[in-house]
Length: 192
Ligand code: VGL
Ligand code: ZN
Image 1 (tube, rainbow, N blue to C red):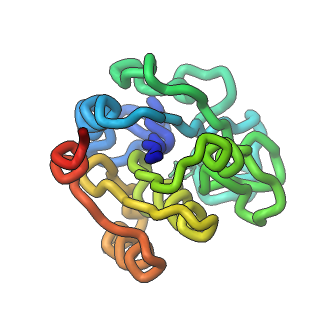
Image 2: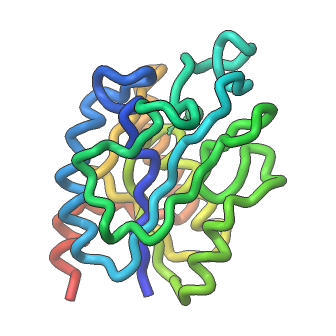
Image 3: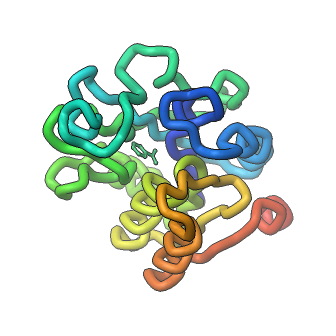
């Protein structure tokens, strides 16, 4: 059984949002098409309390973004959600951030995504979304570490590139960890 994990496709990560990823909105039609090729689709949602420690005003490195209940935290309205079986929220506790959709950054607290996929007999996990160099990368690395055959769908993802080259380095890091890099047309072509 294979699963599609849509990472943080939220208003704040799209152009005009609080932590805009360049071309972040471009992945939405690609993600929508990919959903048709999967029997199991789940999503993650960055979901921070208003005083979250990752925000610059609290000593973190990010602008205020994805505040619980705000419109910026909502999934992009153009994203199809009828096939999304569950949305796993992350970064919900003030002291610790959670780039991965599976665990907090200190690996102490699980979101439940790993058990959910294992209960569904998932063995192949396809990861895409925003941002390639943060939440997508760490989600894919954790999927791999949990033993899933893991794919990163490159053209259904975009990165923030705080430093030029971050996206390329993230792709190399995923490859080195055993994550396979694929394009959406390969995934769609292989669907039954
Ligand atoms: C993300 C930075 C802060 C992401 C979330 O979804 O990649 N990046 N919070
Ligand atoms: Zn965040």
